[in-house]
Image 1 (cartoon, rainbow, N blue to C red):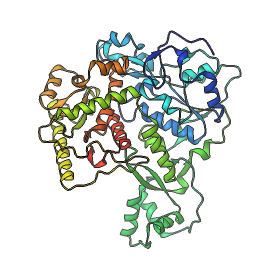
Image 2 (image 1 turned 45 degrees about the horizontal axis):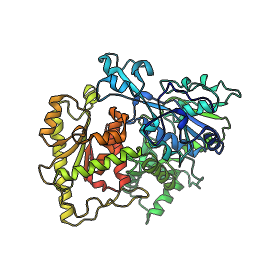
Image 3 (image 1 turned 90 degrees about the vertical axis):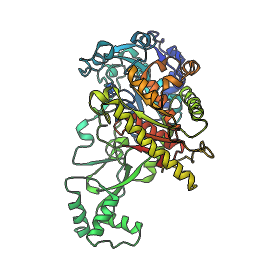
Image 4 (image 1 turned 180 degrees about the horizontal axis):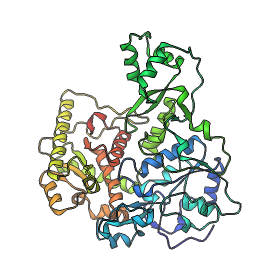
Length: 518
């Protein structure tokens, strides 16, 4: 093994405490063996400026899709060794004592933050093992970090690019030189195709059918249509000749349309869509034949795309991806443990009654006018109104003795936390996750029933998680887990924090009717 680089802070994947770089959970030889069982590496140009949970989508979302692609292609995904935290809860020099502080604009080559005060331009390199239980993830999937890739090839870990781009020169200078194949960004899914995991079996088509003509006209310039809309389109034309769902699917198949599986938003919301078979391009079909050691997907493909950046041609593959998101990507154990402690305290806050929770995104959302309201008072009023509706919904469900359900996701059972627990009452306090930091704003939230992380976290909680909890991005992960415990959850669809909570609630077995995202 190469000598450890003691100048770079490193977090052992899955633990979340500072260790020396030679104390990783897998040594280089074990990693080399893991990689040898795959066809090589799948790599990306990562948009590290996004952070972990700062928008929709975010780095977590991008990495989930990367693991999917690498698994489909039987390759080892290479993660960035670090991501950037956007803000420190204390003076910036405090966080700078524990994580490498950088000017975010300089680090990623962006002028986005140049007009902000200098302290707000700062960011902190946070090892990937703080943001996700990396040890657990790679017990199920073949993933390594760029740092590990460089060490495997006898290269200096300091070569890792600060902006997340794959360095086609610096990362390919070892002897022997790793071969490289590139999937050009514009070739991945141009507007003329629909990218899927793999092409479905070829069907026998009737050709020239009126059914095909009607559906093509309904599609217009689009390539996808919701399956229910396709059904209604044919019914409105008096063409509902099928007597079962199976016959309807066979009708579509014989007329050149494939049924595809994807999500309405979060992976807890599966839907079906149709597309003409001729428009489909399979990831496996197009790229599995590459034999180069490194396969690079150039640029970014996350914007305006469904989770996984493709659609699935079978239910089974969609379920496997859902399982990856819900059960493969999980926070480090310390965060999970502290969140459970806070959830128990929230029960006590309202004398043992069910408690509700919401996410109020302020900060840059206000700056870009993405918040539900730029006025904090109006924003909080909206949240309380939505939570009031949620409380009544819970009371109605309890009164009618409705059984709590789970989302349509694999390997979960209904959460049992609130069995025989009294529903919320009007005026009960609620947990509010927010990046609002003005003293007046925080005081207003407290006076109107909000319980904040800073009010309920104890010094012991902070010691259990360690120094990463100084950073707001790590605190956001903790708060996501806390919100996954609430009886009812409300948030804004534009933030990926909300999407992460929805996924976590799905994994916990929370009733999807008790979540509202608008």
